Length: 491
Image (cartoon, rainbow, N blue to C red; front, side):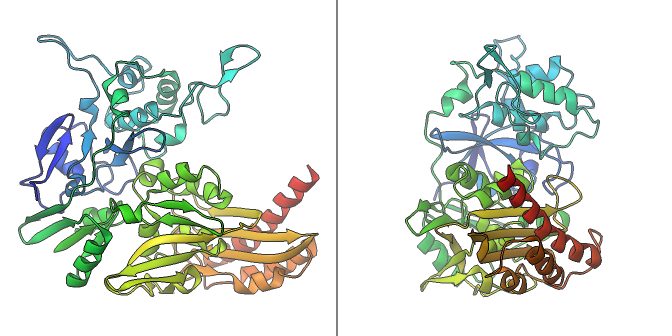
């Protein structure tokens, strides 16, 4: 076991003497890299974003932006990190560094006002700058570049890459202008060349200080044995949930076990009768690897938090917390998904509809992990995900509804409806499904079923929405789906 260390801006940096719960943000700032800022400490503002070298989808390595305020520094053992300070190219002795193209565009277009958020924006922007499949959109008639839509630039820049970054000076227009102005990385760009080499391999970590430990094993079998021996351990993957507990509620754990880099949890297989998604894959990796193959998941991903969060969050973590307002459970319930649960004695498969047993409770036993999510094939052709929230993106849902319907010859042959935010657990709308199946897909059927859907779950009133509003939105969501499907047919 080698001493834990992180390569920061090309320099190997020992983790010691940081405590196991120390965030990457505090680790970096304590070493003088103060471009990484704390704004919210819960992954909402992006002032803390940094780049991490991860296994790529289109190239051996992707530069991925993550929230340094959430990830434990120990989780980056053996990995490569670039901060805003590391993007510029060092000049010769006595000369100033050369700004990175992203930094240059932000400067000349007035993208920095008070400057507090700027380093985080720059790191998120740099990750999109280095995205291998980013390319300019060309107007074939005029031979010039154009914006395909308001959220994509003529250079292929996706503004959703900045959805997790907040500017309190409201300087979004010049920031957008800077994003849409960056070109392609130069051939000699060292970070662009780095993409052609393999990402750092996972390393086993055993880091202890002051009575607490951060552990990562090489294999799933070793991890499961460890969890049997240490039932009190907190299991983390992207740490987007646990990181908030550490920062906001000052929670500490005597033992944290990381599973995000276990090969057995990072597989994605498309077979004849099902798709199996590793519980340790990040949502961004799933999105890019599936590339729209599961339309309901493709509709979910852009509405799930921000790109910064999706770059770290996993399906295993979202389901493992058992939260009734998680965005993925309603979608996976509508997809008839099941979970593969593993412990030191073996594996078992549990339908997701039977997984949740109470508020943040499930059938998962101590020492058991979610290894994979299985989605049966073929998929239902009529699907939709409706997320009702106060903000369009990067918000917690008041109500989430996912639909998957088989409609043949105008009749609903099969209906699956998943709900979130209306009960102590995510639930299937069983009564509404029964009210639809075997009946014509018509305005009368939908009107009757919408009345049933309004009564599903046990919605409550809180600061996000009233119980009455939640019930109303359930009924309206089915009517919206019907309107969308009939519009598609008439078109």
